[in-house]
Length: 374
Image (cartoon, rainbow, N blue to C red; front, side):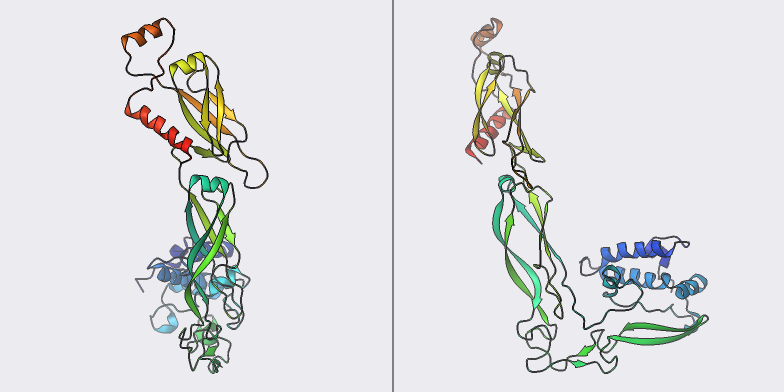
């Protein structure tokens, strides 16, 4: 068994770790590698390794024997250390009420469906003012032919004769510490408790099928990048009459070339000529809502910020909007003729010609597009 990793190393705990530390480490790793959550090629193997390590270290007798003999079971003639390592379902016993004691839940009990996650990318203004749209997601739904039984219409599954419908079988082992009884998933029915003699021709006995589901989504005004919408019951369908899981929609918001957002406030930069800043002016400012007039006092310095109250993003929860903050940047002309130079020297009329240069031109272009509502 030289190829097997040390169980303490697998869980990332020390050999003196207590029961709670072991359980905490297992929960974290089991969630990380569970095949229903992690679709990586090696996730299933890693999950089994974590489960095996936990099943040994969480049991006092198994742990004592492992600490003494390692992966070698003295009752197996030098073979591998054995134990009840269960199936993937055991993790839900721990997270949802089973207590992690190794007893599997009733295989015929209703089971809640898995949650789903969908990432939606929207425009900057759509996040600000909300959006309604339809999305299509693949999800597992109950088979319409057999209604989830997996059996051919007109027939029904039979109780497993080996486990008598319990879904579990007992394995008895004699150890240096006494007689040990382990429970594991029935090898005949794979823990289902039932045997399907005649399978449904539509789902081939699975009781469920992958389908494309169209869902109408309402994104509220004020949504932000990274926001999460929960749509109850829109996840995978439950089994044996159990409730469906939920759908979580993760919002990703595209950046805007003119506006920037911090919480519900909007920030932007507006260019001013030297004449506008020195003599004062009234300019038109684009906002998310409309265009407004902004009075620029004479002698305004570059970097000065003005606040437009209520012109920001609508509050996600509550009335009103954030504010818009306008930072003015004085653009220095790069080419002056003799007349303009003379005018500057005399502090007379300043040329209103837009400054040249690639950076300044793109700056004005962005503002023009904002005015158009792009």
